[in-house]
Image 1 (cartoon, rainbow, N blue to C red):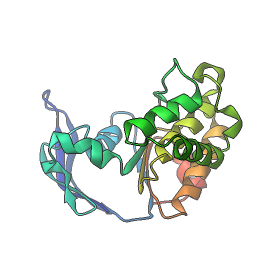
Image 2: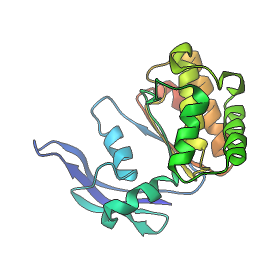
Image 3: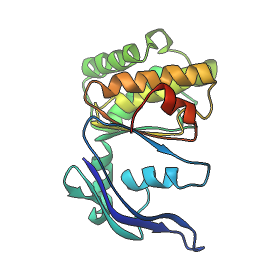
Length: 207
């Protein structure tokens, strides 16, 4: 599903974020990318989502060489990915429902009934149904992160990428979030989590 073939990423200042990486992530795998801050974890995820391009090597996702992807095709590729950011990136001027509705309409959904049903489904999945009319500032960090996960699930993507998803929440909430990601993986999704928290790996074994 995701193949890195001798991939390197070097920045203009000469820093090697990644050097000669070759690996495969299969459908339905639960994978941790582990390392200290600055080790290249976020760069690895940004290469998958085509936010950055490799200096050399090839990245193949679902049999498509994304290193050769035209810029105009990138948004369509990203619809097959759900992305969970550490800093949430929720729109602060609208409530939870409107945040999720915005994403669906931006990706081509038009039917109001279908939009409502999909939003209710993903909010129920993350245990946040009762929060749909709350504003982001009215939610705790853990609740905001659950909303971000719901947003990542909206278009039922086969791949979920989580970049330090527990960085801004307390340890107990971190465990609940990763447990939820583990449950989502068990439905056949591929989950890739970048983290520096080794305790998560011990509690929720993956590759």
